[in-house]
Image (tube, rainbow, N blue to C red; front, side, top):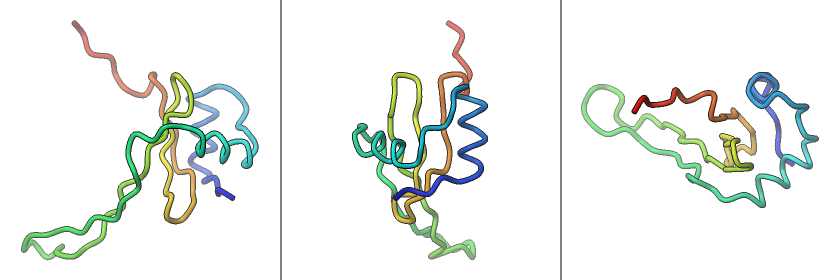
Length: 92
């Protein structure tokens, strides 16, 4: 089962404006949603002292028309949620 971080819970309430689905329902929604990006562990190169340092890139799932969730699929944790209100609109 997918864990839900405290940050995810707070941002869901703030950004989506409806009750957080039960963990099982959220897990089902993610499993049946298209992914926009897979979760990956990347390692830094270069010679700046960070060589070999691991960085995790979170998976992105488009679960509804206006909701994208960030999930650490390696540790099975829902981390954050984004809606169209989060991204500033470009002016024409």
